[in-house]
Length: 164
Image 1 (cartoon, rainbow, N blue to C red):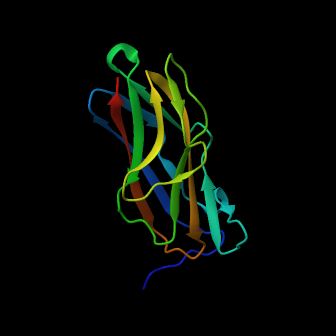
Image 2: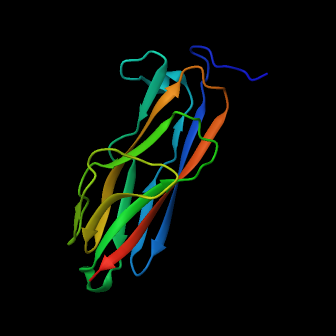
């Protein structure tokens, strides 16, 4: 018999691990802390529902850097996906870019949330070296009666050199 959480008992440990993968001649660096939700008090009520909750990280919880492009002027895009892992059905994991970061290059796209599923989706694109691009994570659709336990997934960020 599985144990169910009761208010304000510890609800669930949700972990989002960060990983980076390089494709072609660009480097990607992802820094930040693992997202961990451990008590009901860490969660916000879901929109229009008292049966689900939403977790939102700080606007710069994760920093993304794309560098080492030939001559600093090549074009690139960053794709994201998550591992299937032990991720509860109905819960959504989303990420968005909340700023432009720093550097000679430029970045465009996805200042709204993009759902991170088990297949790659484009998060943003740019030209040249760009560092410390701030990202924010949102977890929604978490039911208040979710089984007590740990539910973990990993987000993989992949940079693809698209030209130049």
